[in-house]
Length: 256
Image 1 (cartoon, helix red, strand yellow):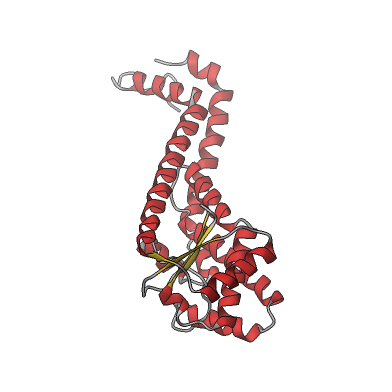
Image 2 (cartoon, helix red, strand yellow; image 1 turned 90 degrees about the vertical axis):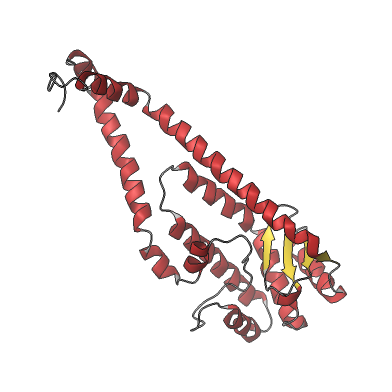
């Protein structure tokens, strides 16, 4: 559309050559932007990990019953689990990739009996055996590598899907299905208790992430429109790049 046209505009020729230069190196430019985005995401993850490590200032020896239950489940799944018992009234329970470790608070444990502690330990042991903490990081870095924003809802939907899979595995393997379902209902942060993660981390989660985490999966997929726009934009950019490079000889011979 611009080849050999509007040459009387002073900025046209440098703009035209800048576009050609950019398209000739578009793949390298996109890879460079992806590397920067992934590096930034990795940096944010390390900062989050440091904020979680602050909890270790409140770490104490876990109750003997809890330690025995977690150890038994870890042996059952053939995984190593480092139990980090945090002496705080806040309620949280989550697994991290380093260790791997399970952080569980006194406020979370004090409301559970031994049977409920067993299913919680089974839940976290299955997460670790499935390498779900690593999957979470991998998805986050993949979405960061796509450069464009809008993938938060999809990432949260994938997180909830992993929770549902683990829930179903626990229900299949536990003796008291009703106990686990009641615990799920009690742990739900929604008023209607429609769904909820039995073990969840409120530490380090942004306000938007917590809001998304309360949405039903079907609603999260509806919120994924920004991600679809970003994907469509990337596809259009590379489609236009293909057309541009195909016609490069013509473009180079028809500049101002």
